[in-house]
Amino acid sequence: MQIKTITIIGSGNVAFHLGQRFVEKGVDVEAVCSRNKNHAETLAKTLGTTGISNYSKIPRTSDMYIIAVSDDAIADVVQELGSYLAKDALVYHTSGSVSSEAVRSFFTKGGVFYPLQTFSKSRSTDFDKLPICLHTEDTASKDRLEALARSICPNVHWVDDQQRASLHVAAVFVNNFTNHLYHIGHQLCEKEQVSFDLLRPLIEETALKIQKHPPREMQTGPARRGDEQTIQKHLDYLKDDSTLTALYRLLSQSIITTNED
Amino acid sequence: MQIKTITIIGSGNVAFHLGQRFVEKGVDVEAVCSRNKNHAETLAKTLGTTGISNYSKIPRTSDMYIIAVSDDAIADVVQELGSYLAKDALVYHTSGSVSSEAVRSFFTKGGVFYPLQTFSKSRSTDFDKLPICLHTEDTASKDRLEALARSICPNVHWVDDQQRASLHVAAVFVNNFTNHLYHIGHQLCEKEQVSFDLLRPLIEETALKIQKHPPREMQTGPARRGDEQTIQKHLDYLKDDSTLTALYRLLSQSIITTNED
Image 1: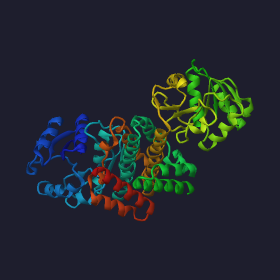
Image 2 (image 1 turned 60 degrees about the vertical axis):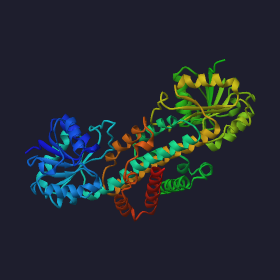
Image 3 (image 1 turned 45 degrees about the vertical axis):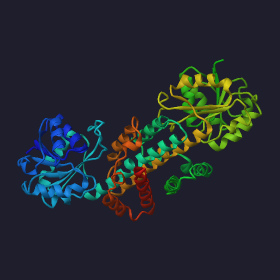
Image 4 (image 1 turned 90 degrees about the vertical axis):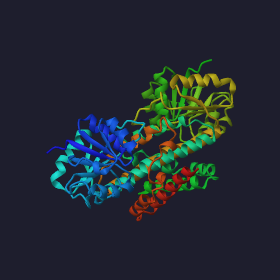
């Protein structure tokens, strides 16, 4: 029994990009449900479907329900859906950090449908590249779920709660923290009135280099070389900024330790 | 008076990629000079030129000499070249972190020819994208130098010593430290037996997102949202690793502070 009809709960970036992709690939998005009426209707219009802001009007017979709301709203949404949907409805959340328990406490066949990517309204999302991480404890629906995921993305993985928790921490390091290092680079450029454009090709190449290699093999720089003189020069340069000094020290030390392993 | 002939001192990644590019663009590389005879000859062969391991045999009449050796070897190389070349020879180094003084102390018309990129022997270098940062205090040779740089790269900038010092620190943050964050992501995946491939599309997208936007506007994640609950969950996950805990705290705090500015 293929999953043919979906209701999306939420109207943010994940709801937007997932919804678009489902529609593109011929999956029927029956409704978009969001407490904010405007948001629900705007996204519904984009997807050519119905916008619902009153949960009591949610379609009862969708093959699947995908909750794409902020992490801290998931529990409330699940509870509210519990009033209207059958206990065995396929209800999934899309979060990297929330346990599948949050859904399964109400919906026994529920699980996680987590597209691991950073979404922005202003950029299109490449579903041919990103991984979708699936989890359910209902073995009977696994094949259907995987078929649905594969219909929008070739890169589908079964990832349990513990693995997803670790992936989410890792994603914070490689995405959020990395972006903050870019911001620090931007600030250092601004201070000396150099264009950040000078660093952009380096940033791109750094990310492309590890697409085929383990990052450890691609490590370069003064800490990797054990070049104390350059490290000291950089620390002198940063001496008026205690945060940057602490970060420089800690990251350099961590590279040196990795190197010794 | 156009710069038509170059001698390269050094045989590492920068010498290799710069040399190749010069040859491709029709600049005559008269010789490659390296203390290691094998290295000199191997690179010379690749470039279709002469390999020299004895500095006394260096061509005396090249229009320009480019020193592409490790930072801590530059001073010695300059001193040695001082025995054979005229004081007004155009001698340039390619380092991001060494002052132009290191060259100018011997060669009054010397300066810096710094391609800001991470070079690997195993990857080709896109000279149409990377910036070349130039510096000289000899105004008479500026036009010639810029013309040479533009003949191999459309992205040429005049960057003084102080600006280059700041760029180099910034490059350590956006390249070396970022790569180390990738390595941390890799470790976290390995620990739970999840493939690092799941993070690679995220890493690429993170770098591509800031190609057109300031990184600050692209910042996402629990620290950006002030989501204390998720931060605490991540710190619990990392609690057995004091380095990762310290890094997580410091980077999150720095994002929060940036956000408040």
